[in-house]
Length: 81
Image 1 (cartoon, rainbow, N blue to C red):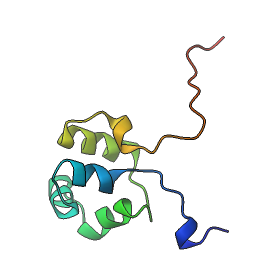
Image 2 (tube, one colour):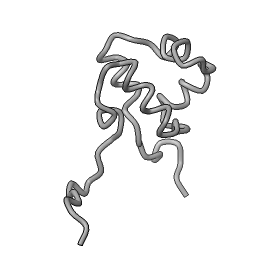
Image 3 (cartoon, helix red, strand yellow):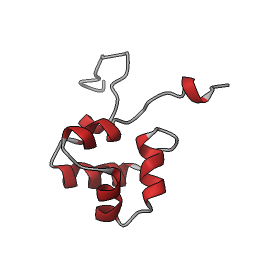
């Protein structure tokens, strides 16, 4: 069982907001979400759904992939046989 300190980071929302000069409060206002919800996303306590990640990427004018922490396995499936 994971503890708080071992919680896996799945998104980079907090880092990307800092890099773009925005705050969690700003993001909550733009999305019409409770600031507590956005705070949970920023601490990886909970995760936004894919639709919300897409909205965030559009608001910040970035590729959605920037919001997601890459996995250790860097292999990409390029085709299905």
